[in-house]
Amino acid sequence: MRAREREYARERELERKNRVRARERGRAHVREKQSERTLAREREKLRESVRARERERTRERKTERERARERESAREYVCGRCAPERERVRESERERECTRERECAPESVRERVRASERERASERERARERERARENESVRERTRACERECARARERESAREY
Image (cartoon, helix red, strand yellow):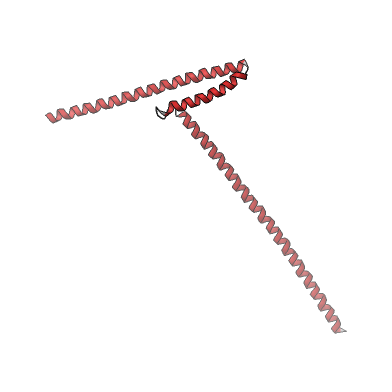
């Protein structure tokens, strides 16, 4: 009788242990799943931050390109040869835009376009004037430098004669 009870007690204990083990395995499994989920969430956050950084960089690159373009257009003349050509290209682009506007635009818009064209023409003329003044100034500067150099040479010559 006691042996049978001990047997039952042992079996119950084994079942209990098995249930506990199964519960632990289940919990471990759940924990694993949760940790996988949190890891996936963290990975996604990282990816998102990387994407955000990339977007920011591309935005900065765009603004940098735009700034460079503005600097390029602000630098009126690079050299005598290529600047007028660039200006001509810009003008032809503007004219293409304007003809489209002229054909189908109402009178007020056309008037505005004409006014802006006049403004651009006067701006071009002012730019040419500035360029001429700059060139004249550089010629004057070179002339002065040459005169100074000649004066020094004359002084050296006269000093050598004495």
